[in-house]
Image (tube, rainbow, N blue to C red; front, side):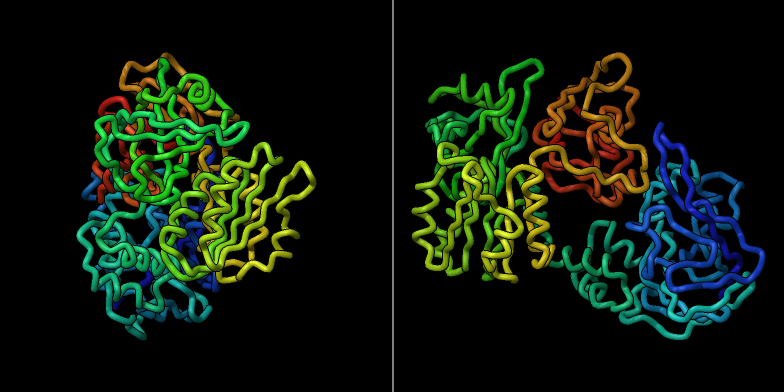
Length: 557
């Protein structure tokens, strides 16, 4: 018979970490008497980051005394106490390789249901002063698990734990955890996992995405070539007052890899260090030459406008990007402002080449007619499509694409929307399209990506900069979106910590190569890993949290 050995609670607090402040509720201490288990929490307990912890599906975290003893031996430590792994229930019994998602247990007056394994989170490493511990819990198949409260009631140390129902498909916590985080997945087991009604919605969605992707890498992760290669300029066309189109082909005339509509090229131009910038393709899939269309608005674009000539060569990384047109039959909204029209034009070309029967809405905003690029080209493509609608908004004459204007158009509610333009434009249009399924709203953002730093409350600096201290002597690391190149300093432990030292916005969660939140396209160069990720990223990508540059490297960050 399994037993509840200790009930542990704690409220969130701010703790110092790597020169920043983190809000976390991972510090738990035992409760001496009975505690009420409620739908969202135990009384007296809380979480610092409700995006990743807590809530109905993760109301109670369970860990086993056997696992505490295991880590005491593995890590050569004898300072463990109940609640130290952030668990609410320390239990004798209920091992991860026997408990199944969907199992229901009676403890004291309450009834609980197993919903998912523990979230891989860096704050466990912070709490235990063992940064690699989140990865070890997965690789050693000892994650622990969460409970949902089915019937509220009091619980106390010493309560017996009684199994009252088994979960569908009898898939253990350890197996479910490995299916998400470890390589060598069995497709049939993935299908069964996605079919467990008790599994938390986020994990169900992850398994559905894995099934949809099959063994193929996600869109945008397999580049047509490694690093940068020279391409020859075959044509230059001034599309508008500010936009120049550049056609690029292989110098030897060989065929270029097919580029899906919506992808972008990254160019490296002369300089010390050589600056890089990314530009959407405005050519359609399968065209013999790539075409990018560049607005003059910065150092690299000004160089391209002023210095580039037909016959010249320029270094280019392979087409990349996840902002691509989904295949389907639902209506399509192509919404752009200014030079954001370029990926939309490529998508429109793809639809026209397929003689698409889909309902298509072309909504474009420009300041005035002198800045209206591709008007004739877009009009010809739209005329070839039987169910196309076009609306042009010129802001200088007071004609704006506002929320009210969007509402008046009567756009189809089942549409997929693709939006590209200035940040505020994309945010405003996305808000105006609130009636659409959020998963069908796609945006392309070439600036710095928004940060995902769970629990961190210290804001980033105003803009990316060189790291403090003397310059490094290692390989050159270029953050392409931030427009920053930094010699690698040996004191940095990873490309992630270097980006943080430079105030480059980053995305991460586990910081130990498990969750892949930090995955980033590598536009040029290569990396090494320490520690090794549990599952390697796709070709052309790196997990920044455990990667270091093997040579000069260019990151899409």
